[in-house]
Image (cartoon, rainbow, N blue to C red):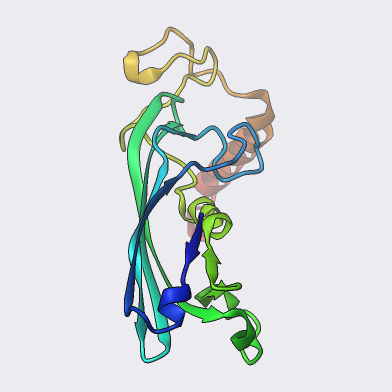
Length: 188
């Protein structure tokens, strides 16, 4: 959505209220995205204001969205609401010539009297969104052998069997233990 700031830039008003919703456009099956396998159940709600104080314009926004994402341990659906705040200085496009490199993210740039923040807000959502969700802090996850959700009960797999890839480490551990028992003075 393009926000018309011409009246604010002309000094006709001091404050502009922002209240709109947008649907995030992304591929939930793109494994390279931070939003991989996340489904949003509501549009992204954007609320806030832009205030012009003697030519200095400041934008403060609160964003929120409801989601369903898989638990990082057991893959059960985790439902919740995520919100974050954005604060930026609003400047017309010609005034950024003297800005230091790397500080551009602190500014929202107005082009021809309009501010288009949708792409930037979606990027901020992706950067701010938690990288993994848990259905419960004590989630037991899935059985490594059969894949059963251990939150629903124990499985019948023999967990005493060692992964063959770990046998060299087990042998090294046993050698270290034997050496330590034989030479107790070499302990550190």
